[in-house]
Image 1 (tube, rainbow, N blue to C red):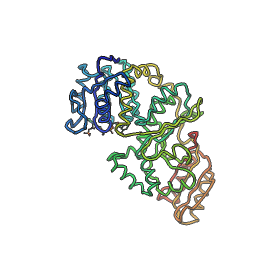
Image 2: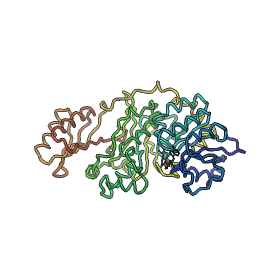
Image 3: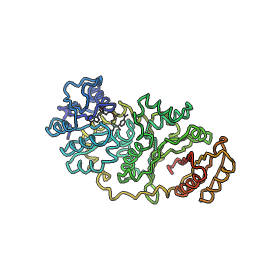
Length: 435
Ligand SMILES: NC(=O)c1ccc[n+]([C@@H]2O[C@H](COP(=O)([O-])OP(=O)(O)OC[C@H]3O[C@@H](n4cnc5c(N)ncnc54)[C@H](OP(=O)(O)O)[C@@H]3O)[C@@H](O)[C@H]2O)c1
């Protein structure tokens, strides 16, 4: 597809929920402004929505409404649209409509990280075979333009680490727990009430959503193979308010981080709650804000932060992709960048157990002999303890020196033989260099 200034670019919009409505608002209500800045006009020609009568606050008199993916297929085939915007969510219907468009040679713009992380390789292959492209700026950090940063501004930089806060729901929950002294359940309930979390927030809090985004970031920034299964994932469900408060007294903030790191042995990809120094930019990233840190050979750190979600910020990223597609840039990127075609040249992944960290370990013991026994268990498992404190009568906090993850896991398994429940809280310290 190439833009012709006299003809509007006809968009099929699959999904008209939070993001889709934002896309409509920008294309319809701010069309003149967008034209003034981009020289391009877009027309929403088709909308896939289960309930077309739902009020969306934007009139789209020329759009044809369809209720099912199969009906959209017909419009993609009959030449009445130029580009598909997929903002349905999920992977089944999303994959269906994306493949239908690509097989017809139409470019696809999506905000759907699960779609790219799980089916990206297939979609890239089909796009390449049909001379078109897939654009997914909104998929990693909503309104924060991380994809453009990697593919353009940082193209000459060898990125050694990309890490950050990519799930606003988790960051909101952790911020509320610390600042308002709320329990995990209370903070999550508040996130749901405010519309930050889904009715079923499992994929947010268990780290899956962050892993999807990390898979994409690592593909772009580190040349990783697109493989969510290679990511070691932990969520925030077992974090207690007390751990956040103790961490702060130690000079750290606890954040759910997605971390991609280039090491001598290969790539380490992981998602887990992590302790970062209070003066680090990520420690100051509060609420639903997203932030990504890039470290490269030719630069100090670059930090991008902003609205990681929400209707208009995310829709803004979708529309920026539409402009890139219409200008032909997206397709040129697709043809030019090896990440979309050379998975076999990707560096190997480092097994999670081989990585080394300093750990925060809080074990629940109310008797001093047990606290002492835990220290001995760690010593016999080659886990060196740096400091040991008792923040309250019911627990002991041990800060280790840098130790192998496998050794720490073995030690924790031994600790659980002594104190089966509740399980210890284990947090990794993350240094500013991402290690
Ligand atoms: N919301 C954000 O801030 C944000 C930020 C970044 C990326 N994203 C991504 O953007 C995508 C859309 O998110 P969203 O928040 O806009 O979701 P949403 O509010 O749930 O909107 C999705 C819309 O698609 C419709 N839909 C889903 N499956 C359909 C099907 N098979 N046939 C017809 N209609 C269907 C839904 O209809 P029903 O309501 O009837 O199911 C709904 O109107 C997701 O992939 C999400 O991960 C969202």
